[in-house]
View 1 (cartoon, chains in turn brown, yellow):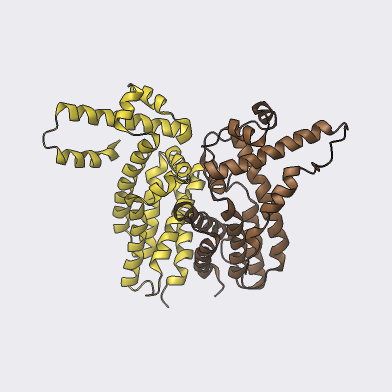
View 2: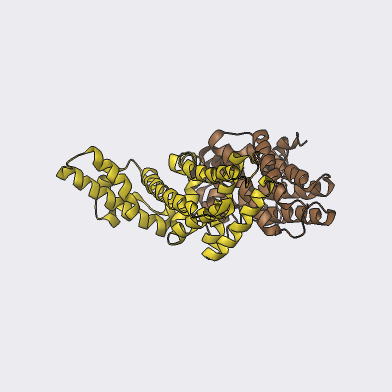
Length: 231
Length: 216
């Protein structure tokens, strides 16, 4: 149902955020904003380098120095843009998730079928997206429990966008009559989030691909739906 | 520290008359584990260093490394010891349950009560649990699998008693109950939920997850 999603965005990301809107073929014209755009270009280079390194070496296994080297910038200029490695991770994930959620916002209104079906599709889009960068995503989740993260960090679970999307999906189900209006929606959201995180562990321990994770999640959703279906 | 007792007891059973050397070694291990437990709780897994742990235990880093291969080894030992004790507490709690819902609720509650006084350590465990190297080791460990098995046992008992249908998909449900149990730690750790609030939430979750399995 969602084949083709897997390819979504990776190429776009490197295409538009790598260049940061600057065409490398054109010499940068000297404008007052040149400093600004240089800073922006550094930022984008660091984010891409960090994304690739975190994904291969893990978050803890990557140093700021390696990120700077791969991005082709000085360690000093990394620190003028980001306060810490944790902040770089947050920015990397923020950009990725913004794209994912923008895509979901576009798709969700067009989904048909039961609430459970719509949830299955929504999560399958997530798995297709995140399976491309497994270790990066795991680092993102682990950061939620990390002491050394800045308090401004938005690790997995503190980002409320996914919860909002599920809530909208369930509310639609209540309106359409296949979700019991007596159900505690927040509780169902939490169960789904718990299932989602658990299924993601399959990628960590068994190297499961997106299709496998989607199949497992579908079963979890069906079981949870038994608990919220209107009888 | 009382949770370390079973493992030590097992070790002593092999060595009939512990030599002075063995005793000293056990004492060293116990001291390191106690210091590590404290530092992991205060500084988190990443924040606690072997050097700090050694200093807190009043010994050299070399002495720590003579007993544990690295920090993850130390953390794993603490976690596994706790999980064995937790499993016992949960099993006892389940035996007092009346019916499948109640038995499961008592298991959840026993878990939250167990970690109530050591939430920072639970937080460190979640952090470590998501790392690609350590996560699978902890999850696939025998004591961890036993906790899921305990949930499955309750479901099977429910099927035998006729509370749940034969098609109850006990394996999947057991795993989902376990993940629901774990997911509530987020509220406990970050939002300071009381045991009562966690119990109320758990009761509803169990009801939802068993809804499709009930008979009739």
